[in-house]
Structure formats: structure tokens, C-alpha cells
Length: 305
Image (cartoon, rainbow, N blue to C red; front, side, top):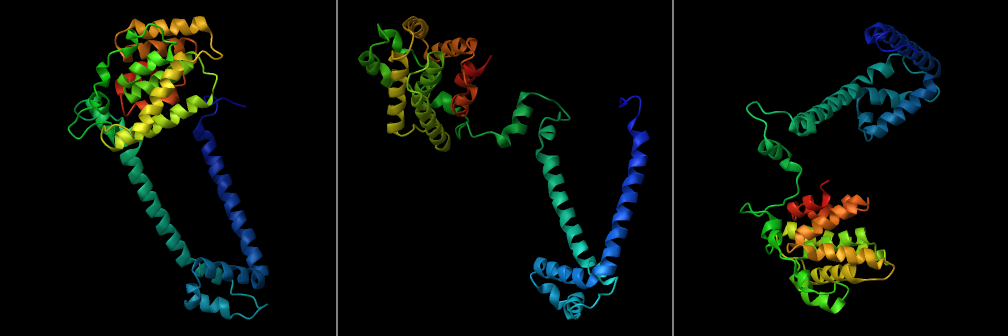
């Protein structure tokens, strides 16, 4: 085998083209010979194919009448199969050109290379974001405010768990859980499960299903609060993820509890827990895709390296 620089492409292109042409002509010659000798049989097959692809309309054309009127066992005129295929070939060519045009049009307007092509004047974040905006899920209010920033002051949510003496106390956690927005409840439940997995593996799947529904509802309704049942379920899962001791190491859980109450800002505490999970290669980034259209800042804090 020779390397590319030892045998440039132009040295091998011409022989391949000539070889391909020879093979094509040889194939056509063999097919023509088959048609010459087996036209009584192949003509019937050809007629059936043409009638099927034209929904029998071909029968009412000149060549259709000819092929359907030849008696069984009689040979067909040699050039008939070629001349009768001209119309079908033109239609197929037109359809191919039309499909190619639409494919080229979409490629020239929507391909990622076109979106990321530098504008003639400047190339900044605003231009990049504007080009990619057509694929982005709606994440802003009609007035231009981010959903995450406007949904109950999520970006500046105080940490209510700093008021709880023991985060293993379920009753105490339930008294402050109502102060946690739903997206923080879901994110905290998932991050805690990543740091210290719960005994019940189905709990994580339940959280993912709930946050997906809540996110879709919030985005579709421009920042509206999800149904109360979903919010309540997420807060319950959050409390369970923080306090449940079953099959979990007590020392590790105490360390995570200290990380939660260390910051007076709940999103910051969740971000620190996410870093701890990343350090142990336990964070599942796809599980937080629902958060991006709802709260970009928190999504970045969790998923950034």
C-alpha cells in the first residue's frame, strides 16, 4: 500500500474513471443482449412495472398500448424499451433536480457551517446567538426577561436549610421545603442522589419525569408555575434525597449536609454539590437538560467543568 504523497489522487482518478466507463458499457451490452433474447418474458415484466408505477395510466399512452397489445410469447421491438423509458426518465430527472434543489437550499441556509460563518461586519456573541436562535427552545418571556430569573426570584433564592439544625430530620426539612422553587428542588434532589445514591433507584426516574413535565409546562406557558401536584412531588423527593439514611454512608452524608448549609445562597450550594459529584465522576450531565431553558445560570453552575 502506498501513501497519499507517493501516489497523488490525480494519478489514480483517470484509470478509475476509464475502468468505471468500461464496466458501465459492458453492463449495458449484457442487458441489451438479455433484452434481445428474452424480450417475450422481460417485456411482460417491464409492462407490469410501468403499469404499477403509473397507476395503470401508462396503458392509455402510445407505448403502453403497444406493450399491452403484443401477444404472449411474441418478441418486442428492440428499441421499444428504450424509447418508452424516455418519459419516465425525464420525470425521474425532474424529481431528482427538484429534491436536489430543496436539499441545496436547506444546506445553504440552515447548515451549522452556515450558521457559524463569520458575518461580513463583525463576529460576536450576539451574532452567533442570533444565528442559532432558530433551534433554541424558547427560554425568555415576551418582554425579554429570562424565565429562570423571573420565576419567583430563583436566581437570588436564600438557602432555607441554614435554619435547620439537623438535615436528617424529615419533619424539620418539610417545614422549610415550601420555600424552595420547583427547579431548585428538582436539581437538588438529582445532585444529592448523584453524590450519595438513594437505595430506591426508581426515585431518580420519578424526579426526572417530574422535572421534564414541569420544564415543558413552564416554557410553554412563559414562566408559569407548574401544577401544584408536580411541585409538591419534587419537594418531597428533595427532602428524601437530603435526609434518607438507607444504604448511605453517614459520614459522607454529613459532609454533604455541611456543604448545603455552608452557603446562604441555595443555587450556590447546589453548584458546590455538583462540583463534588463531578470530582467523583458521578454527575450525569444529560439529566439536567431540562434545566437549561428554565434557568440557564443554574444549569451552567451544575454542568460547567
